[in-house]
Image 1 (cartoon, rainbow, N blue to C red):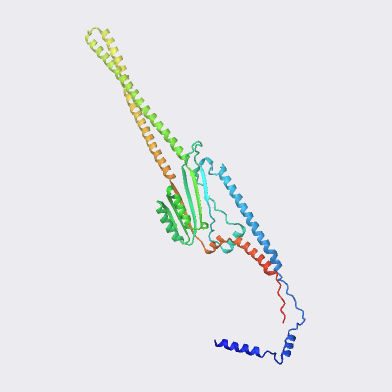
Image 2: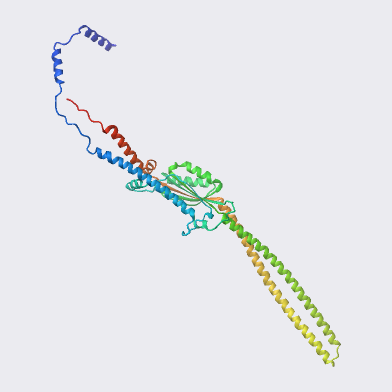
Length: 415
């Protein structure tokens, strides 16, 4: 309120005394004289000498990086196609035969990953020369290519194997958590390794819980920090091989049992025939012996004929007895041989049943491997903002900055 009274008082005084100072004209002239320009030569500053060099080099570098990135991407795509053709074509010169009849079905769900620890200069040089290649799926072991399945059989006995490559800054914590998850999905851990910056887990899961497990693990990590590799192989040829061997062994067992029964029947018939003949010979000899008793001792000729007949019948009986013993011995050997073959065939059928059960159990389980690698902050930044892309962005920003601000000339300041 007090300040407002002072302001009003000064305003009233100014309105009342409206007049110029006594020396107003003198002061006005001095001010005008001081503002008169002095005609001096001012040198205009020329643009920076290296500006044109930057204007030439920066677009060229940006163009070079763009073309190099496009070319390497094209080469990688072509290489991937050739690799697929190689595996599908079945090269005979390779140690492993990649036959399409083996039923190989490779599936890859790939997310961009991070490289191992390298020097800063090496990382930049590698990323400028070529983008990070996509991880390749290792070919299946040779055991998967040993058989040829019948193409008319459309059954599927798919054996699934998969791998997870995970990048994280908490290796030990994630290692413990993943082992707990595997056991929670009714899995079995076969091998586990752990150190400060690396860990691995080899395990087995029921096929019924496989998809749920993979989905939960992939949701735990960002897409760029996890890579999934999955292989599906149809083991139909193994199933068909077991079925063929089982059918052959079953037929063999039936034939052996039939042949054994026939052998016993023939043996019984032959033994009965020999015993009957021996019995007939015995009766004949008994009759001759009885007749011999009725002949007079003086009748030597008659006695001689009876003795010759008895000796003849005795020799025949001896031959039949020897054949009977030989037949019985051979029959025992034949039965032992049949029993041994039958036992081996039955054991083979039991083993084939175990193999069939093992095959089904193998198909109904999934073998998995998880690897955990420590990721540095630089790798995280380069993962989301690759170095070669950063160079291109910086070059474009430099060009835009020059166009907007570099062409303006400074104004000449007058005293």
